[in-house]
Image: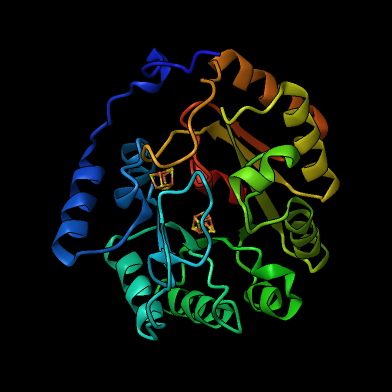
Length: 283
Ligand code: SF4
Ligand code: SF4
């Protein structure tokens, strides 16, 4: 039972640096803008930023949950910053972002689960950036409909919620979450009339091929339109280990299977992140 040593060659990529990337990087540093792309040192920055896509995290940077794969800090979050919606909207304007992905930490400490800041952020973005399209990558809001409904009312072009892994590994990977609750949230979003719903999983945590197929089938049964499948990478030694590096060929197999199942888009590859090529998903 040997653990993989070193990254395979398909994960060793160079950041493509274009003019647009350099320009945005300058703005981010100058105005101290907070993007997931920079804080997670995402390998896709050159590509995404070149196309005018970036991901922003709201509701602070301390999460009430402690998923075994996630690099975000766990603990008691700071008090809610009511200026945050304006700050995010302004960042999007300064960076001239065409397609913004908004995500948040989980705020199980708040009665509204953070949904009021969510809606205020969406409104502020729309007000300041009328031509920017939006994907909201939301928490499960513990399945509480009145909180999810706030997102639904704002009607972003894409609403996503990640199941992250297969059913069997959910307890280990996302201890406070439930596989079925996530599926229910996704199904509910679609029933409420959200145009595009989306979910993502990471591979390399010890899941079997047939379990990945089953998860894709479960997402399709919940009427999910778009699925992303990428390689899990360990953020630090304290996080879950990588059990396996999935080959590009295997990712291609999942993509083919997903398209056969009827997903509108399938992004499947070693470097795929939930927000990778997100601007394509509004089509
Ligand atoms: Fe940012 Fe997501 Fe693109 Fe990475 S994949 S650069 S986090 S938008
Ligand atoms: Fe990370 Fe989200 Fe889990 Fe919080 S709920 S630990 S932000 S994956």
